[in-house]
Length: 221
Picture (cartoon, rainbow, N blue to C red):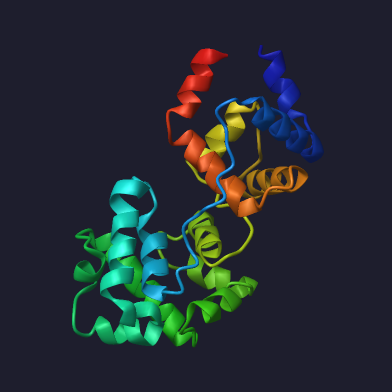
């Protein structure tokens, strides 16, 4: 019987937050990254980033496409401009992506926001403050809580988007969580306790877990 695991399962939220803070401070290879992607002021790029990022290597598959969209299609900064552009070229060409699932998802997000009267990224950020609107995004097949929160990160909200990297980081810290919401709360409140911007903490954990640092720490401890 794993006594240590049982002890962690019985921790309350405050204890989990403190345990995460202690764990972060114990890692020699962990650093806070205060530059993150997003705030593009370009709806085409923002939607593309959120739709393409899931289960992809961001540096090689996502960021180059987002940068190309921002450079080659300035008219797609608004939803209205993006829709006009997509009457002339295909979404596959716009995203430089052949997979039909993501191109379909991209179209459904564009259509939803257009129908909701969202045009600029400023409009979108305001729209994302309304809980029912988040549920409307979730109704699109393939968009879950993580992608919704990733949209919020891209538009300047202070939060985190819980993915496998963040969940594995909590596991490395010996912290069990009941689900997405508790994982998000523990990570956000640990960031607050360390006076770190929540979005920066999210990106710092993601970067740490997606590089060799985590492997190094495992070998060194």
